[in-house]
Amino acid sequence: MDLFEYQGRAEFARFGLPVPPGGIADDVETAVKVAEESGYPVVIKAQVQVGGRGKAGGVKLAENADEVRLHAGNILGMDIKGHVVHRLFVANAADIAEEYYASYTLDRTAKMHLLMLSAEGGVEIEEVAVTNPEAIVKLHINPVDGISLEAARQACVDAKLNPAAVDQAAAVLVQLYRCFTEGDCDLAEINPLVLTPQGKVLALDAKVSLDENAMFRHPEWAEYEATVVRDAREHLAHDKGLQYIGLEGSVGIIANGAGLAMSTLDVVNQVGGSAANFLDIGGGANADVMTGALEVINTDAAVKSIFINIFGGITRGEEVAKGIVEALKRVTLNSPIVIRLDGTNAEEGRQILLDAGIAADKLISKPTMLEAARAAVELAKR
Ligand code: GDP
Ligand code: MN
Image (tube, rainbow, N blue to C red; front, side, top):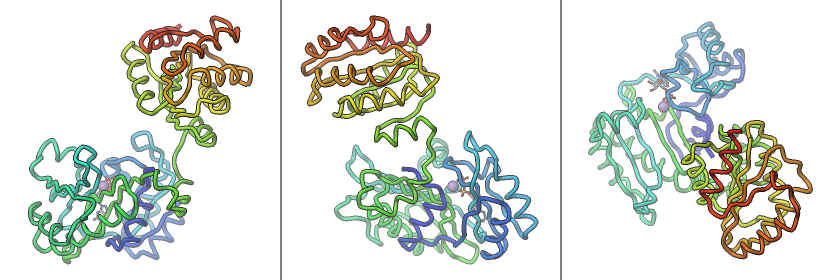
């Protein structure tokens, strides 16, 4: 779950990181109020979940209430890379001498946490990685040991941070690591981490993504959950407890298992089509789940065909087939289904579908994933 900057800052603050205090505003006059409380100059920042807000004009400094009104008025409603700004973050502005970059992620291949640190902050790190890769210090951290203050300090020296920043930046790296691990983040990134002319180190941006597998031990995340940006289809799917992500194409996808669902998107793409969604029904291919899945896909006007791709393992073919037959009694579909049913008890499943007497142009069975993808894409193009 990706957080907005102001939420990421709240997570940082919980772990003692130096974040300048500020507040959110959804309208101009609230922005002025927060600015007066924070003290001028203030920085006004668009709260959208996309990078490069600064370059897009979504981050502005203001010296007084009139300037706050001007900038807040301009930024609210602004479209930044397809994200419309509904909320601002306003805080006392820091003076900046130098801008650094710091982040923790999980390196799955190495089975370790990864610190990335650079003295070339402020710009997007992907850019630094291309133009000046040696400016990024990478340090793998064994999750059993964590990162010591000494190791953090050495990383700061290796990254050639200003000596005046090293002690404070090292402390920040230790705090950020705690935030990342104890706070159950997939990503905790500060860009920029700044050194002020007065010699203080501050975190001026927060990019935090939470690991939703840890949701059960964070009742306080309900607040973040409430602001997750979803389209109408995703809302419906979420209410039905489905693992669904809306996409732009015309072939609705239902698969069991995230890996198979991803491969299904790839195969549809490979044969010249495009998927309308990602949907993993997991092991629960019963009538309720199948009905929910078909209902969500059926609300999507862009969908022209539905590709159900099931490889039975623990999920048995005849259960899936019964689920589909039952679901089709409950939902009237706008598009035909192409199904590929394989694996455990697939034969029985196919027989159940045949015996159900569903019209031949409503449900088409194909023996392989590739043939099914071709058929679904062809139907979608008609
Ligand atoms: P992003 O462009 O979406 O990553 O947004 P940031 O929060 O990183 O802000 C972009 C840039 O605005 C930063 O790199 C800074 O140069 C500048 N900026 C942000 N906060 C402040 C601040 O408090 N004071 C000053 N002077 N500049 C700031
Ligand atoms: Mn930033």
